Length: 516
Image (tube, rainbow, N blue to C red):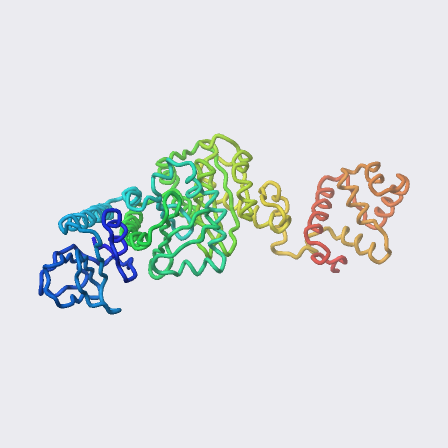
């Protein structure tokens, strides 16, 4: 592995007194050290040690990308294009200096060899980060573009103060900061850059990983245990090169892994007519059995979440909160199936686990009824999707919409699929509404309240703030205008449905006067 002048200067200053006039470089470009022999031409990217009395009187020319350690007074040509020259002030053994530089190359070389070895092993990223802790003395975290934690240094698990670095709740809280326009530009950066400490609580060095020129992963090292050194950025880039190799290998392995639970569920939703025996075999491999009870959640995802690829992070976070669940993107929303039997509770228990997350994340949820087995998976998915769609339309201020709460509205909407509302509703009720508008009466509202109160005359009169005799007079007038037999069950049901449909349509949906 190659080193930089900044690494050399920092590591040697504890044992040697060094003086130099040129700014230190963080670029990893220097190869192993050599003793300079009089008359030799120095080569780029080499480190040389030269001792006073072993060179002739002419000035030494140090190439731009070489380094010279001078022991004693040695004349060098000093121009802006010359390489780095270190003058050792004290009387120093050149062999001691040589050995110390060699130890540095051995130290970093062993790290590099281990990274190379791990990069070609399955599941090696975690070991890479642990191996690198002795180099950086700070933890390193690898996230996907959607904030999913791929791997992190094990030291985080041993230090309570570091737990927030990988805690899903904490990550989700500050992920919105990544999404604003200022931070969006960071996703395009090449090489090492600093991420501000006001978001995560600690200044961080970051390196982006791109796939086909698209931001895919971020390697982050927070300044949480030790102060950064000037050369840490270059070393982090070196580590990132190996992480990229390992990620590429893991992606190939995952592609060949076959079916996962989310793929099984999404395939069934796409093709509901799957062979039942095959389906049950697939699910049994994940401990999901036909006798277990399940339910489905459908989440509406904002366009910003889709644009910034936070969907997979949301899915992972929900799976962490809801044990024995599977969350995945389907039809531009997030679909979640929960195994209630293995979860050990009911639908309300499961929703209590995520309700605050939904509210804080501005996510609306549609909830299906509970079901047993796999035969109706697609239908219960549709229940959750319908609950979200209809419920959000009827009560947009609510976070959670249950199918059994909107089922009637859904039935009424479906009944108008072929005919407009005014041709489905009771003509007599429409006539009554039209009469009220012309004569400024209140018969429509009176009849509606009477039906809602289960034909209770006393309760209806009380709510209308009129005497019971006045109410009975109104009912007689209504009977003269539209002859309704509310004692007949079918008639009463039709009237109730008409009132509900007209509520759903609002003032502009159904014409007040029925067509002849």
